[in-house]
Every structure is written in structure tokens, then in C-alpha cells.
Image (cartoon, rainbow, N blue to C red; front, top):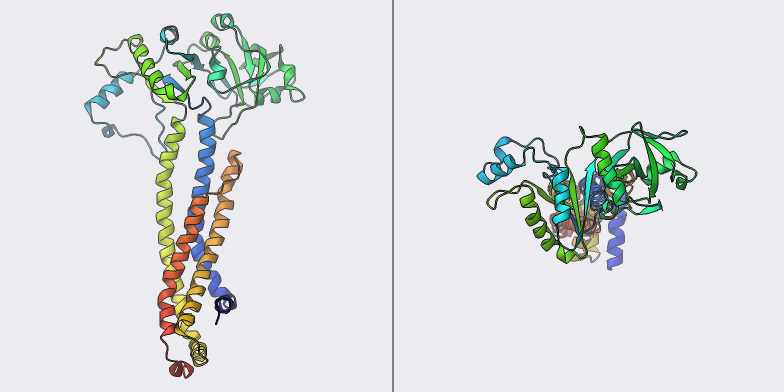
Length: 426
């Protein structure tokens, strides 16, 4: 028999036992489905998170009074997790050491590195904005910044203008509306918001600008915001405002290490630290949260890979049993093929092709269903359609090996049958 004839006969035998084949394909597909689904969902979430927390760009960093302290998949940190003396000193030095207005201003004045420095202060979240006709949902965030805040955080102005230094120092009640906020209050034409008065958390603000739409994610909506000066936040929300964030942007990413070193050297005396003291502030690169998530997601991928392999081992055993049953059922057929001149290689090839084809059918079903279900996360996070091609290729190769391994013994057993005994088999 030719290769084409052997392959056609194998496919005819597979399609002739639909229930048996379907159950085996479903078992194999289940393991591949779980792996591809999780990998696809993680990749979609990674794209969204990277977009959300890398808004400042690769050539920016910020100074915060403490680490963001994000733990993915874990609970509270136990007291005995940090036992070294240096870690305890660092923990003690960080307690209550917020970055004050005076410290932030002093850093901006003293930092001599060729870079742009911006100061920011977080205002209240989940507030309502309204004008005389429209009202937003309670999902708006107030942000306070200076003249460099927009550039450092990747915002551009669609209509209107930026703050002036005098407006920042005076803390006037003026603001810039995010694209989502402006669209909600002025759905016909967001440009109409310019020079209008809107109420932000029951306080009237005059709008001087509207920001362009910017990539958002499920982790932070960059359009549902109101940006005002940090002095306005200090004036109206003195009891709620906590610590200043200091953003620094260099012209070239190659200057990042030098800029960070200069920033630490400038900020240490401002924070009243001696040479031997641990630093009581944190240098936060723009993509640090995204990198934390990506690192944590690797463990989840490894766990799903282990589950998928266990499932595939079980499916390989199941597939081997089914192929052994097929050998017993087709003993007379094997004897007839041998009596007509069929060789051992042709018999082995027939059963190996059947085993590999069944396994590949499971791989295709698992991959397609895993990608489709995993991309539900892409729809929720509003990212593009994601296909983890590397894992797809790995899934196909692994399933091919599983089919080959499961079919070796049944194929060997079939090829060793004596044609006389096989023809007399009942």
C-alpha cells in the first residue's frame, strides 16, 4: 500500500468509530484547552496591564514614599517573611515617611540632571462630575499635577491649553477633563467644554482643556479623570491627600541609570538621611507593575502546563487501550492484509497513523476552543485578539508525541500477528 492508501484506511477506521474517537479526542482536547485558555487569557491581561502602567514610557521613573506592594495571588505578608536586619531597618524607616510638599518642591529645584521633573498628588476617587444638563457615574478620579504632568504621563491635549506656573502656584479651581469625562458631559461635541463651569465633587471648576483619548484597561481607565493642579488638591483635600509622587523623564533610555543615581543622591539629604541610613523612598519604573504581573503569571503558566501534562498522560493511556481494542477487533482484517501481501511496516504505519490522527484531532479541538474562550478576557479588557503561537506549536508537537507513544505498542502487536492465526480468530 502507498502512503496515501494507508492514511485513507486509517481515517476510514477512525471515522467509523465515532463515539470511541470522540471520547478520546475530548480527553486530549481537555488538557490542551486548559493550557491554551489560561495562556491566552494571561497574554491578554498582560497586554492590558502593560498598556495601563507603562503610560510614562520606558525613559521615565518616579519617586514614591513606599513600594506599591502588589502581591498577585497571595494574601497578607507574614511578619516573619522579612527577618534580616536590613529589611527590618528599611521597613521601620518607611513607616509614616510620606513625601511632603516641601520635599517634592525641594527635589524639583535641586535636581540638576538634564531631565523633566513633574509633581503629582492623587485626589479622591469614585466621584461625580456634572454640568447643568448631564451627570457622570461615580467613577471619576481627580488627579493633581504641574505643568509637566501631562507629558510625563503620556497625555496630550485635544482642545484648550495646559496649566501655567502661576495657576499651579495659586491652586485655582481650573481643570482639564479626560476624554471620557468630557464625552459624558458634552456628548455632542466635547470641545464645548472649554471655558464652561463643571461641578467636580460639588466644587465648581472652569475647564481650560480636554485631553485626547488614551489607551485604557480594566485596571485603570485613563479617560474618566479630571486633572487639576496639585495645589488645588492640597487646598481642597488637605485631610485626604497623602504623599506626593515625583516623576522624572529623561531624553534617552540609556540615561536612565545615571538619572536614577542622581535622583537618589539628590533626594537623600532632602529626606534627612545619613550616608549609612537605608533609603526611605522607592524608585518606581513605569513598567514595574506590569513586570511584577508578568513574573507572577509565569508560575501560573507552569502550573497549567503541569496539569495539561497530567491530563495528556491519562489521555495517552486511554488512547493506548483504545488502540489495543482496535487491534483485537480487527485481527481478521490484519490477517487478511498480511495474506494479500501486506508488510509489517504497513500494518504498523496504519495503527500509528490512527493514533497520531486521533491525538492531533484532540489538539486542534483544544487549541481552537482554548483560544476562543481565552479571548473572552481580551473582549472584557478591550485588547486585540490574542493567539499564543508558541504554545500552539508546543501543543501540536506534544499531542503528536502523545499519539506516537500511545500507538507504538498496539502497532507493534498488530504487526507481529501470525496471518494464519489471525484469519482463524473469532
